[in-house]
Length: 258
Image (cartoon, rainbow, N blue to C red; front, side, top):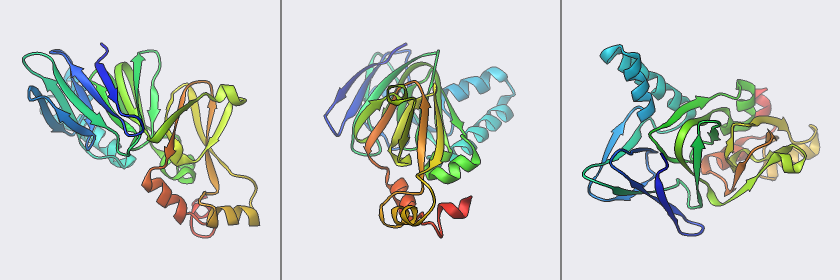
């Protein structure tokens, strides 16, 4: 079921969701802004879908504990906050508002069960409780080279998903540019799971590559997105990714991870 919503603002946007009696959303810790008094807020170590799946599998308290530990472990690897916040209305419809980690635009995505989205750390805002949350590992070598690109959040299922980016969000499709795009890893906010994520060296090794890494504010490697599907690119980089790039010199950064 689609959550009714309203996006407000221009380059610093928020999204207000109207939750009916049978609806709920879960959110990244820190994205909540305001709510009506009839909407409850709970902080838990597992997503609503994960809790439901644990209950279906049985196992009682032990099964629930194992499911929680698995999800918390995945989020710890991703560098995310360990807990989700759950929001549910009581006694009728209620309103709850969210905004992204960085001042910027939000994008409301409707998943129909036929495809999902990969979301970069810090870009997830909230999702309807029918959305499945998981962590995706593009590969150890890929992740080492991309810095933050090693672990991505993966959302599937049916319902409403809200993501946000720093500054303005631009939607691109690699298919419109020869089937492949190269991006700064910190500029990737989210992309459809029909698109393949990878990493490649930005040119050949040499004096110019060293100059780029040391003084150009860019690492030796670029994220690549290949195939066909929507890609959301953010104008402002996440601070952690900017700091990673500044530290990654040819002598002490990415080359040391090869």
